Length: 221
Image (cartoon, rainbow, N blue to C red; front, side, top):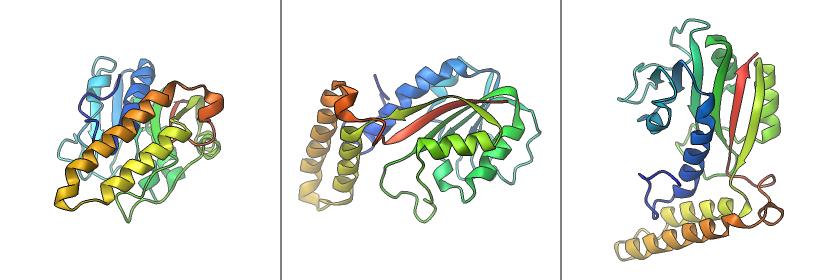
């Protein structure tokens, strides 16, 4: 399984497929009114459309957003949402704790937060790529903001993390015209290898030590 819109030669296929599959699993917790913070082009609408009553996206940079405003500046009523979705956003926020506190405030009691958070990855959206997080820092930040964690799950492992970094290295190099197509083949091979060895036991792949990403599901206390 994976995101059918992502091709094998796309450099971020590994991480996009991991997030897609884990969001499918996490979607069983989604309910009611959902706010998608930093929604982009709403890539996960298909996953949640039958799980929630309404999917509202907020993103000051996206034409697909329902609310085209900065989340910190937007006037959003407290206790107004049942679910918040926030994928690959917190690393771009100068004050992550402030972000989580506002999320908590606008959620209803026992409301659900679903987040994906990077641990290993190349710089992106420079110069607003500020942080990387461990599961221990995620636990501390969320607890301090008033959340109760249901689970934090590692996405990927040593092999997929190395493969992912290799793909982004290849994407940033070998860009002369006559190398572009051989590069696509290399990307495909690296990522296919990562999928083959994904079934190795965790004692070998060590997902707890070197994930690409985390997904966390938590509820407002």
